[in-house]
Structure formats: structure tokens, C-alpha cells
Image (tube, rainbow, N blue to C red; front, side, top):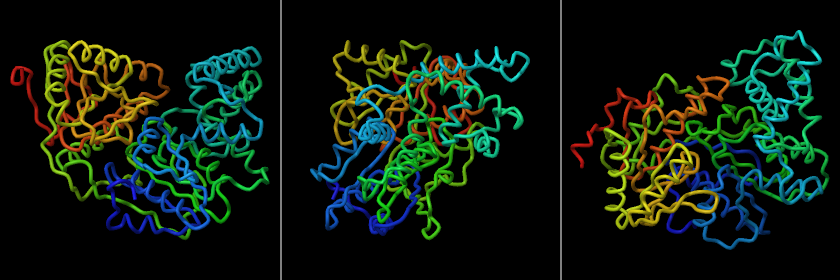
Length: 471
């Protein structure tokens, strides 16, 4: 078993699912999805014959966390990110070097802009090419994540989650021209969004026995359809594919459904878990208010918690006159709590993480920054720092979310570079949802200046306080 964690109720049924076929398990935040995924992986790895099992997730910090809590030396069980899996497979074919070989997002935008310039010169009267390069980057990324290879397929596909980016069907051909030019001029055969397509294509013609008998995806809502298709193709034909996810925590902006990923659940029901083991009802109710925002994108696959196990106080929102006072209060609270609980400070970007890190160290604290090399544990008393993205899948006794002022959250650069402000705000809101649902007990939010427009001001599920009442 997984340390002292034991499955209960419907969780036991998931662990007893067949060893052949596709399975979809959806759950609310705190419902134990990661635990179930790991317990299923261990159970499968311990079957007679020692079948090879792969657990894949999106976040490298979560990989570190999962690897640590598994506490097993099973040689036939691997836990890794999708891109590590993709690199390893292509490297086994001699198709990619062990390091590098993938175009960075910044270089990808550069070569798409070059391709757009070529198109402008070739068709100088076409108005489509007057649109910003960001629109082309965004649309090409959509093409890649769906694994679209031909203009005919692109013309037919429904642009899921793309309604706010208006592209007339007759103008799609011009976007595809830029896409084709980009492919011809980029210096490497892959970028981070289309490497999954090439993995999938290679697997279609690869007659070698598959390396894995069972593949389990955790935080699957953040995977693109072509990523899922490639993982399904990487499983032995008599093996199993299990998808664990929560659409409310889809924070990487894909807005693409697992239903478009080739998962075959014709003969299997979708498992839904609405029992929240992590968050007290007070915090879970506040998180629900976040999802009631006008900015929130509704999804029929979202699971709303109905049962809560943990108990705790209401979330609290504190207003400060300025940033210095807010930071001083944060430091004082962390110094009080560092030896008695696990505490995480969740920030919108790494710049803020570094500033708080410096301030804490000057005050005698040595926080752990959660990144690809470090993870956080709710049962380890300490102070952790993380961005909204890095904290995905983790949990702590106390969560602090500072600087929820409108000039910092939503992130200005993200909005300025977004093709659709509507979608960008929806993505930012999901980050807030992820952050607040990390708490096992206390949730402390603070701001100075004007409160973020994304904060659910009308919610009755948090208490307000002024700095003067606390300092």
C-alpha cells in the first residue's frame, strides 16, 4: 500500500478495475485521484508476471511528490512527465538526441513570425495575414494539439474551445499555409506541442512489442488529445489505459476535452468521485463560489463535491494599505506557523516567489521553493513557496495567497499576449481555484490596492479583515 493510505468505498472499486481496456476516473479537488492512480499502478505492477506500468503526469514537481510517496522499489513501475516519455521513445528510434532537439516556445513564435512574413510577401493582398502573430501561434498550437496534418482535416474539424478566436472557415487555408511554412523553416523537427503527434505516428508503424502493459495518466485534463492518443497507442493490446482528471483544474490553457482523445469507454462507465477528503467544507464552498464566476467556463464533466471529511475555519481575506505591510504580516504568520504546520505561499509568478524568498531569508526562515527539483508534503512542517502552476496536485495544512490585487492577478503579460482575453481570464480563474483547494485547514488570502476582478466578492464563504485588526 501507499504508506498509511488505504482506499475506501468506491475507491476500492477503481483499484479492482479490469486489467484490459480504457477507464476514465473524474473527481473533484481533494477526492484522492492521485492516490487512486498510484494505488492502481502499484496493484498492476504487483500482478503475476510483473507487467510494466507507466504513470504519466504533467507537472515535474508532482512527479517528485508522487515518486516520494510511492516509497516502493518496484523496477517495473515508472513515474514520469509526458515529455520525458516522448523523448525516451523517440530516442529509442534514433529520432531525437538525449538532450535538446525540441524547439522552445520563444523560438517557435519566432519561426512562426518568419513564416507569416513569407506568406505576406507571397499573398500581399490577403487580409488574413494582417492579424497579429499571436493569433497564428495560438491557432497553430491548436492544430498541433489535435494532431491535424492535412488542410482537409483542418477544414472539417470543429474548433473546440475556439469560439472567441474568430476565424472564418474559408480563411483556415491561410493559417494552414503559415503552418506548413513554419514546419519547413524551423531548425528542429519538434516543438513542445507537436512532439506528441510524431510519437503517435511512429507508434502506428512500430512493430516492436510495446514497452508498457498499463499506462495511467494523472491530471489528465492538462493533456492534449494527441498526447492521450499517443499514450493509448503505447499500451500493449491486452493492457489497460486509465485516465484520472478534474476539468476544474485544467490550468494549461488547452480547453480540449478528453472526449476528443480516442479513449474508448463504450463498455465502461465513467467513474465520478465527489467526496472531498482534503478541504474543509468552508474552503470547498468558497472554491465553488469561484466556479460560479461569469469568467468560469462551464463543463459537463466537472465534478462538484458533495461530501467533506476535513474540518476547518472559513477562508479569510485581508486588506492592507500597501505591499510592505502585506509582506510584513505574511512573514510574521509564517514565523509563527513554521514549526507547527506545513505552510505554502502561492504566487502568480516566479519573480514574486523570489522576492518573498529573499524577504523570508532575511527574517531567519529558509523556505523550500517548489519546482522540478522539490515538492511539498502536507505532513512536513515547513514553509514552501510555489507558483500557481507548480503547486498543482499538492496539499498543505495552511495556504497563503498574497497579492491578489488587480495589478498582479490576473497576470498583465498573460492578458496582453492572449489571443482571447475571455479565455485568458478563464484560465487565470482556474489558477485561483487550484490554489485555494490545496488547503487542508487554513486559507489566508491578502491584497493591497484594488482587489482582483476575479475574486468572488459576493461570496459569503470567507471572512474579511483589515490589516489594522491583525497587526
